[in-house]
Image (cartoon, rainbow, N blue to C red; front, side, top):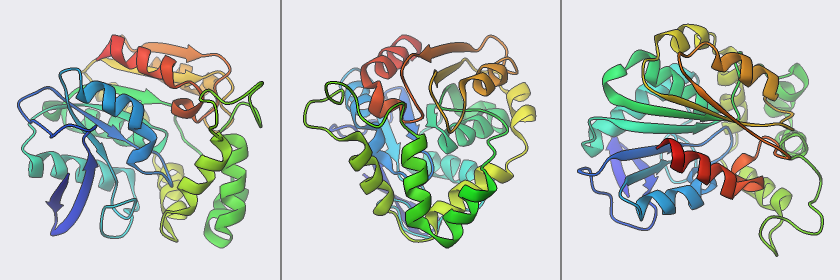
Length: 262
């Protein structure tokens, strides 16, 4: 579906069913250099099991118009404006990587709009190495290859990927390649510059779930585990043999964790 936010078209995938604002809403927020398509499995599941689903494309990503936003706070404000445009008073937010910071920032600042948060592949601070940040600005192809290598627990699964015939590395690389030039640096710079995570975590009052990959080289599990302590009564699920691309490497386990929480 499409909505208008600040006079620009904003896209959200609704999981294969028309969106119904009368149902409890779950919004999925993608990470850096990604789009709504990373959420296809959970989006379809929840859309067919009693939820209104919004898997968004952030500004400048996927099918949403405009330029990428340059701070986590601005992205959080945009999420609230999108909810307003669609007529949703309150939603559960599920965010991966950069999206997890957006979900957290929204929950910490807008208690009235957020029912629950699930944070996948997260940590704080979410620092980006100077080498990767420089490559994101000067050589996107090199940066994408670095991200792809660090986002998976192994180069290839034995005997195959979770879905026969699928190629996780190739699919993830193509997803990054189809984003607009400049999006990668804008996203990673926003993550690197975000410094309000501890305050937002302390201000979060809704239920929270952390889903972490034990072999995550982008946001190591130790940091996510420690960060979870900043939110009262947060639940933590750690997935073995999962890197940063949790939804790709461990789709069933991610869905099971979200089902139990939402």
